[in-house]
Image (cartoon, rainbow, N blue to C red):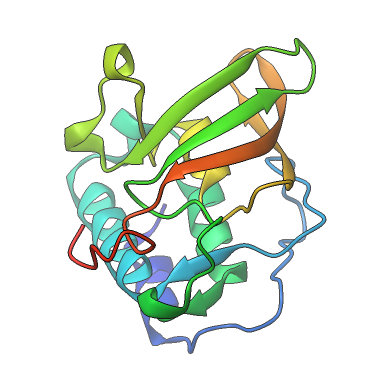
Length: 165
């Protein structure tokens, strides 16, 4: 990922219509995603930091960048309470296996799979950002394509009045 591409992201205004990259095979969506202004800024900062440090250590970050490009950007006080934001705990259903999973979406430094905390830089973590209860998404993972449905948001910082998470 080039730093120039990230710089261009910061110079764009928030998009209010879904962004569909030309050749992406990492996701297919039927619904737009919602990202808070605060989460967008923190994620842009994170992507720039990783690009400068060593993006190879985190794999392909372009899908997350594409998600940020197509997101509907909202004020944290106005995000619907069933949207997965950063530090939200959400229930997902694997549509292939039928296996339910619960993850808290976190920044890389807080990731711990034993505690069900998944990094936003992990494929499923990047995939779940911004979706609402009932939404389905596909995301490319090392083992192939995972199809997931959001079945619940057990905790969302913004809904709990925590705007500093």
